[in-house]
Length: 358
Image (cartoon, rainbow, N blue to C red):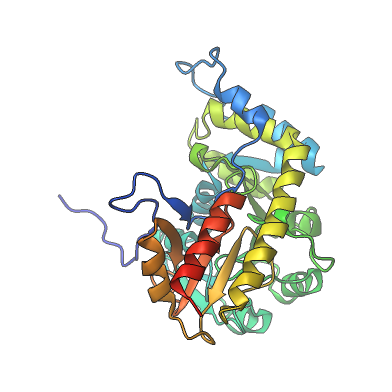
């Protein structure tokens, strides 16, 4: 049998297991440190859930709750099996072979993968000090450019564009280029010069916003995310959307997640306190990172006597997994550290102290 051949490096997620360890401390995938809301746990233990019925294919109740929570138009929301699926559908809807897509040099790998699958050419815009560069994006725009993808804050770098910078980027792009802003980590950001893409571009026709329930809401395993765009784009996406793409449990869990603002506030506070504690601790070993903008830190070993790979391997021997950045992201001598629970972070600190004794 013959099938299409893709010149694509497939996505490799952060490792989640180590031989010889029944249980590991997984700090490799930017998952929620505090898990899910207690309200979600009640849903998951509900014996009345009907698994033999198809879910609502339009996710109406979830879209209604998203609309209420974020004060946006329900008819301009589409839900997916994770924001990954929404990215995939955007590429299918907008891109033809030889069209061009611009992504930051270091960015979420699925932007480039889905673009390449439909035959588009991916252009990488260089970053400056691991921050998305507006001038580099604009410099790479051509007549063939259809979409610009970026996450703000960015994964894996943890840097971000300010309100002014993001608005400036939209202003400088041609009107017929779709700017896709991924708000995956928006809830963690508390800086005065930052607003989510959703708040900045809620009424823009040529900006599409991505959101996920996998990060602060802790629903990674259930696969649920959503997108917000013009009615025209949403209508187009609904034509190609699989009929029952978000399962019933995921929809109900997502609704309850949105209803628990106390849990979200607790998660944000935990992240700020623990991330700053880890950042300060690592600086004792000349391992520096981005300012706290998400639930992870990108650890830079360029000024340290220790190499990233050495620490990674030594931590693995103690059952602790970080994310290597050389594979996939192509960032040398760095590691990405997800903020864990208080206990996990303490074990990480003790392990590093033991490995890097001064």
